[in-house]
Image (cartoon, rainbow, N blue to C red; front, top):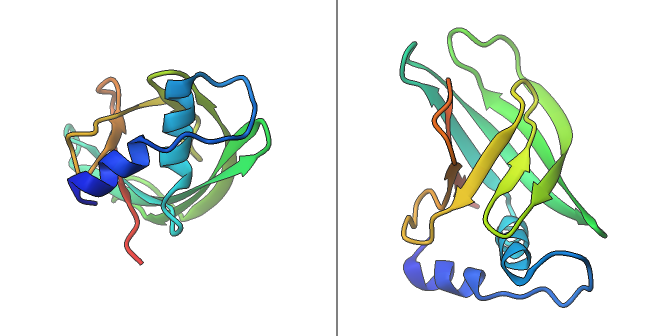
Length: 134
């Protein structure tokens, strides 16, 4: 994603009336924008374990859900998995549970054109999202 596209996505304001603030509306628009969804890459620097999860975010009226599909597992993680989780969006964060992990908090970094969404705090696993290529 180039800087112009990231800026354009950031500038989108949804016209649907709901209780989200303008900044939360921007984050919601960013999540919903890529037609093919997002690719979440995770890694644990302590164990050198890593994996990949595809994520498609869907608008369900006042709710946003994440449809998650683990497509590549690390050496210490067994089995592919699909799940659907609710997403909470605030003015500056996106929060969701994953298929196996809980309480992932993401922030949007408009200066990072490759991985604009990343985990807010370092945890056992680091998470970064990039728009999925067609």
